[in-house]
Image: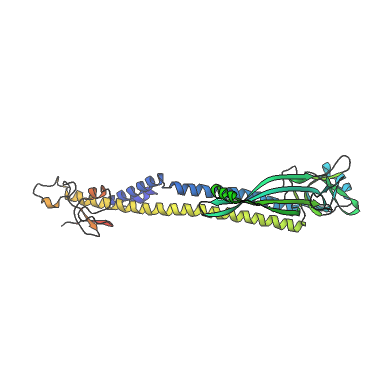
Length: 375
């Protein structure tokens, strides 16, 4: 492509184009990405990639939910699995009432409440001083947590039941809060002084008990198998698909998963756009600096052309007035006009060597420079 351009251009134009291409390629080798910009770009792309990975994983779970068949929990289910290859249905949706296998768990705080999964938690709430925001921020810390479970089944019509395995590995297992009590912290004057010195003010402790009650309707999504003793069991899928146990109905569960997938997709898009914005900013800044370099190269060639025209007969003759010499090097002719002040006092080489763009005569800032044409 460059050869065809050089073929139809004059020697001077070809030289200008060659210099421009060389300066462009040289600038591309040193793409100006600052440390903060590189950090922002890398962070945004990494977070976007992470969120996109989570979105794809959640999207696959939603697709599996949409394709999962609904199985009625009745007396015919065991016969259906008995004729199924491997006596296994890899991913199905089944609903039933929670019933314990043996003695249920009893609530420690609410008399008469029984369940199959129980979670006891004790959390500390306190205020922590934030020196950046100059305010007190809420903080929470789990002091104690205990989870108790007993074997249980999902019971449908005709007293057909399915044993639920590994309930703590399931997603969306939201239990009912049957006890919640906040114990307010008490402290004296010395405690108040110590709190301000340490930057921490205890508010109290929150005591909660959650339970999956007996008789609650539960939606299970997983792998359904028929054991050797003709016991139906629901377990986490062996192919790595997500295992669900939810007290909500299937449609609500599906919509919740779709909403989560949309949220992760939006977050991935936002951080990807942030990375693209940083890259666009760097590209625009690089383009502006490239334009400045090209303008400087053009001026340099113009000054060199003027200088070669003035010295093509050899070195400058001795009778040349001294007042036309550059005030900096005292060897070259004055060849540029400094604007906005308008002083003609130096050659272009000395102008480029100035440590700061300031006129050496009046100390005014130099906004631009133009060649000096002498008749």
